[in-house]
Image 1 (tube, rainbow, N blue to C red):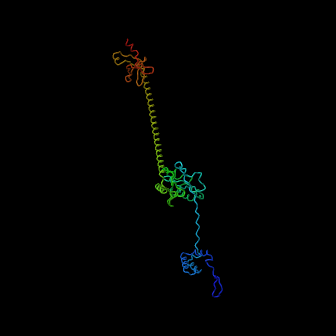
Image 2 (cartoon, rainbow, N blue to C red):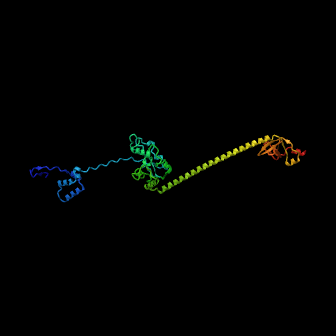
Length: 391
């Protein structure tokens, strides 16, 4: 019976509305605000067999103001939708040898001028190199007002301007060259370290989903702070599985061939340089020899001219030392001095050639006839000697 009789006036009265409600859903909603202690008490009450009246349940509910219907716990918040990140660019493939530095850069026609122009390298490491090298990608975040950089990149750039250090997490702008210390091909770091391409093997290339693990081991590591050589080697060996024996053998063979080719080219260059030096020295000696010969011939001609001029005066002629002792005094004859080879001779008008002493200016023995070719014929008889013997 929903009505109760008042003992005083015996008039039916209507009970106050139940805070639980009339439906099962309302009762379950009412129970959801109970604490564990209250639920245990309610369970004990039910197990005892006592009727679970509205008053008893209200007594349990009123023991804690925080668990009454007026103070039900707030509904759980809906999980915030996570912002989907754009997939990272794919690293260049190695089809004909190692990729070039240009293949790790963003082409000029691919740069989006409507978003941040900062350079980022996180997640772009290529483990096919030893030590590891990185490719670049555009930041792509919305640009701040009045700037072509986002707020984060603008802050990084400002800190780097005050203290140019890799710890500033600033890798430069995508439309400019990367810093000299960046672990990228084409930088001063690459020229000093000379990274070696190991080739393609399973797990050796950092993927877009898991490649960021090797660039920073914790959230505290800055993206711009490059790992040391030993850290790069250990990260590469721990993150990537070892190369196969065939790949290692091929890489070692390629390395030996490159070293052998470099040594061969160096030897050829040294040989060519030595040959050029030798040829220059030979040419120089030939020029010096030719100059000395010309000088000697000039001196000889000058000397012969001086002797010819000096011998214009009559000279005494004697056939021989023994003849000079027994023969009468030689007669003075006019002749001319001729230079044949390195010797000077007195040549008479009849062609007889005699030795001539420059020191004493005396004509010596007959040596032969002076020919038209300006040589001495030693077999020719002395002209005039036969006539003097006959007389």
